[in-house]
Image (cartoon, rainbow, N blue to C red):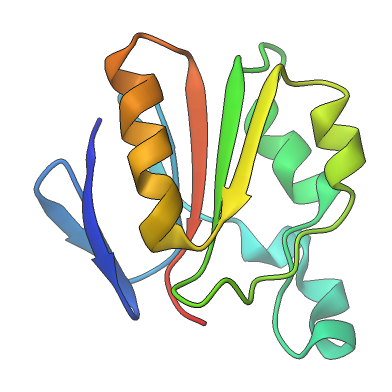
Length: 121
């Protein structure tokens, strides 16, 4: 799948527009499971991306790379990045409009890449 573009509150993947955070891997796209991380919402002002949530996407067969889009302005808090980096060969984290290029390059090169994209803040 290719991430086409993104703007505040939306992302387009392979020609289809989504108005929520998405998780993309191979031919699969799903809505981000924020409820896993929601217990920390009050601490951060909005739902962060936690290791427990990321682990739920990795499954039994972790990808070679993980790309995390932290929102249009890079405001999504990401916790426990060291846990992820210890389990995945390459981790890219940054504002969603910037990291979609990294995701698309890896996807085009045949890298097994997981993309977690926040679409607001």
